[in-house]
Image (cartoon, rainbow, N blue to C red; front, side, top):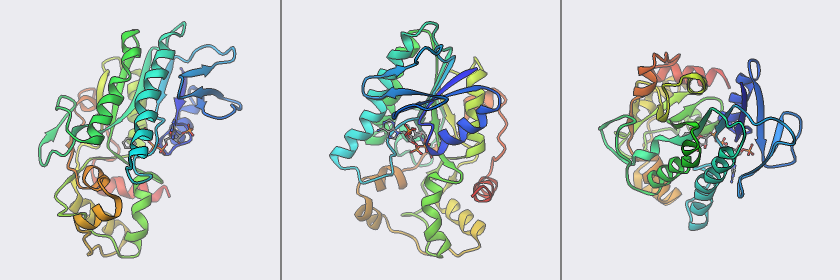
Length: 296
Ligand SMILES: NC(=O)c1ccc[n+]([C@@H]2O[C@H](COP(=O)([O-])OP(=O)(O)OC[C@H]3O[C@@H](n4cnc5c(N)ncnc54)[C@H](OP(=O)(O)O)[C@@H]3O)[C@@H](O)[C@H]2O)c1
């Protein structure tokens, strides 16, 4: 296949481009002057300069402003929204105009779409939740509509927190290594995670499996509570994790992101992937963390 990737310089995108490169032709859609194996993409307009190249047969759209990169001020919320909703609408409108059109679009989304759901077991059929993050993810998924309307198979990949040598785990490591780790708030909130290798394998499955379309939860089959995750990470690092961070401290430090990203509970199961026979290399948190820490 000839696979275009947006966000190819990111944590997931760079690993994906590397893993696909052996078997497929990879075209990185970049926001700067393109080099070899790249084409210029302008997120604000959706313009893609293929410069005489044939359109890709598949697109993996991972680009977006990082949710955790700063406090959610009004300006930041607007950036998070524009980089997801507007960029996706324009990108998919461009794809719809290509001849021939790609057969598949895999578009990033997140389990945050479910909001804060306590102990409820969630699947792709569960409802959208409430809050900024949930509504953002809902609109982000809906922005893929132009591609679906043009007959392109669209997968909205609802990623859990991806554990690997980067991303969220990278930010957690320093306090845990210093023995300053601890549960967040009461620690009973569910944490839906996926090992990077499984996230990449799930994307590969979505590229070829015609049965997968619409929302697909990319999470390990055994989510854990924040308390369990804290214990597992401390175990993996051979450090104590005895210092819980109270909810009010998190709110003081990062504002409303605390409630929606760290204290919210999402207990998501990967029903669609399991239905297709997908096998996870890392089903349990100890295995996922061991792989992530070994890859560093
Ligand atoms: N990692 C996770 O745990 C996780 C969980 C749930 C959902 N997701 C979603 O999955 C996708 C990939 O995650 P990731 O961890 O690889 O993200 P990441 O490391 O933050 O990379 C995202 C990439 O998007 C591009 N980008 C950044 N700001 C942009 C903007 N304003 N407009 C257009 N492109 C922009 C950049 O790539 P270029 O410079 O190459 O354009 C960047 O490297 C993201 O959409 C993320 O929201 C990730």
